Amino acid sequence: MAVYRQKKNQGPKGKRLLISITFLGSAGPIRLIVNEEELVAAVIDTALKSYAREGRLPVLGSNLNDFLLYCPSAGSDALSPWATIGSQGARNFKLWKKQRTEKVEDDGRSSTQAITTNEDGNWKAWTNKFLKLKISSH
Image (cartoon, rainbow, N blue to C red; front, side):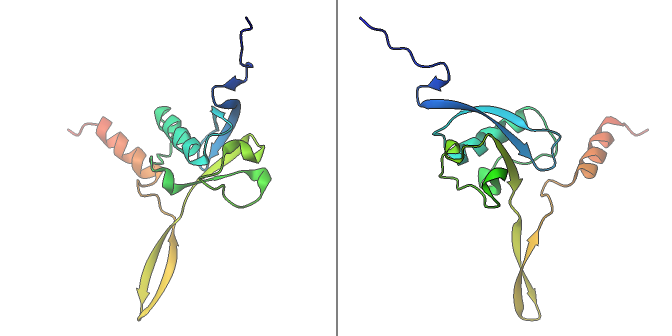
């Protein structure tokens, strides 16, 4: 009777990959092991959870729809959330937060402006708030 053994780098769903995701504004990349058939949206979700678990700054949030995953070697277009991560043939990615757009009414004309501010505030405001909690007033 022959016993079937899976190859070392294959899981139940297929080949596993070690990928590196760099977050815009963060100190360094996060490395994850994912299946090559895993969707880009699932990889973004896993990366955001790992980023938050490690307590990294800046605080990004957890809504995966607010982020885009780019493959630097594949061009300037973001990866489709429904594509598989292994379809790119790359192991290094960049994760960027989408820019919010806001309609502005100006003299009866409407225009769209990109808002790039972080909803959670910037790092200086967070640091000041944190330090004020630690220092008691007399």
